[in-house]
Amino acid sequence: MCGITAYIGKGQALPFLMQGLEKLEYRGYDSAGVTVLNNNQLTTVKCKGRLKNLEEALKGHDMTGSVGIGHTRWATHGIPSNLNSHPHNNADGTLSIVHNGIIENYRELKDILIDKGYKFQSQTDSEVVVQCLDYFYKRGGDLMDAVHKVLNCIEGSYALCIIATKEPDKIIVAKKNSPLVVGKTEEGYVAASDIPALLAYTKEVYFLGDDEMAVLTKDDVHFYNRRNEELHKDITVIPYTLESAQKGGYDTFMLKEIHEQPTAIRETMRGRIFNGRLVFDELKDVDFTKFNKVYYIGCGTAYHACLCGAQIFELENHVPVFAQYASEFRYGNPIIDDKTLCVFCSQSGETADTLAALKLAKEKGCTTISVVNVLGSSIARASDVALYTAAGPEIAVASTKAYTTQIVLLSLFATYVAQELGYPVDEDLLTQMDKIPNYVEALLKDDPIFEGYAKKLENQHDCYFIGRRLDYASVMEGALKLKEVSYVHADAYVGGELKHGAIALIEEGTVVVAVATQPDIAAKTISNIEETIARGADVILFTTDQFDTSAVKTVYRLPNVNPLLMPLLVAIPMQLLAYHTAVIKGRDVDKPRNLAKSVTVE
Image (cartoon, rainbow, N blue to C red):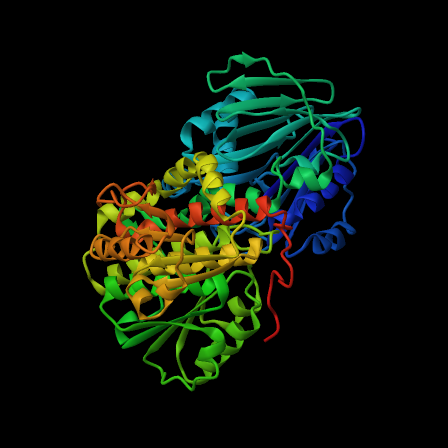
């Protein structure tokens, strides 16, 4: 996601800022900018697009200076644009800040500041920080005092770097629920949102905790808590390379991305729930009353997200909904027209079959909405409305966090449409949705349990997955993950279809992975499970504590949440089961054979 760099020292700031932002490109961004402080004057250059655009823009400016901050932005509030890019400055150009995270109460603070005469240049939540800082700083005290007052006003998450012309010998940084690390170099001190930005200059770092601040000078660094009490911190020496740093200490990118899901889910939900209502400003011009049917269209993992999204939409909005593979939709001569809504899912936004299906839908007059993870991608540009997940880039070929963020966004979307159509919205659903990242974090702590399950598959060539309704979408994705990364042959079946042929494959020792979380159908699934046990199957069951599972030896109890949210929780053990099976079998987890990350051909 967003990247931050900061430099204060005896050398020039700009080279560090730019190389650091380049090292953070893997996090994804849509705009970039830097501010350099020299001779008590701030020079800020920022622009939409890639770092090469910023490099071109810098050629017309004198960026000499030994103090500076930099930023790459992934849009959350406000479209990608020059004005919405960071850094943000106050009106008289004496303060400059960069910010990662979200200011949850920015609307209220913005209204207060506007009443006090402040004018805003951007649509971002981040600009509120520099305007608040300006307000307090001009009313006396030093920069540190003003920063404390700002932090007491804002709610949400942040990694902040702040510079001021009146105190040119320091950078103040602060952190809460957003990463920030400080490095000690031969020239001075640096800061960044991730270790890769520092490694070319130093491996000696300090890690900031939540609600902590630091004051950096060219000669020293001091750390403080929110009560302004000074803290002692020990230097940590980073023992790994750039690629290892990008992995964040994990053995593989896939494992790192699995563990990033709580953050990715939070990022995707940010700004969507406000005062008990769902907010989708992008959809304000869409008339949902005119649609008599809906299609959800995708490929691979995105199709499985569509299966979830389609069922949730139909349940909440009482309109026929169909989920279809893009490769089938585009060649199936679908009966669609201007009363059809088509929702397209793609992580890359470049999937060839999905893009072709989108073009077909537009030719037939459908309203098209895309759910993608890459800003400005082909599918996003071609659709009538683009809704963005906030997973950040996935380096591993097998999708994990992109899948769960797609389900999150599709669930919120379905509920938003119900809200707009006047159907009752389950407030408890929204409350539980807000807690999903916490549930995911708890599931990740049970990783050793899922690793133990994977040992059952060490010498297996086949594995069968069963579930019903939303659970069927979950086992479809679970089977795909296992195939992708471990090369174990895995098939997923609707539980009720086993006895119509597939049960012939079950024999002594066959591993069956079952999911039973939907109250209206779980008992039927468990009955199907017992049929496989009677034929010698070794069953791994994922369910909740609502159901009698006495016939099954291996049972994992998931938290009791709204049934519509269960696919988000089931995804975690499915991913970890596949991951550990692949590791046990010695597979290249991040780069499975024969697969590509973005499928841009048929």
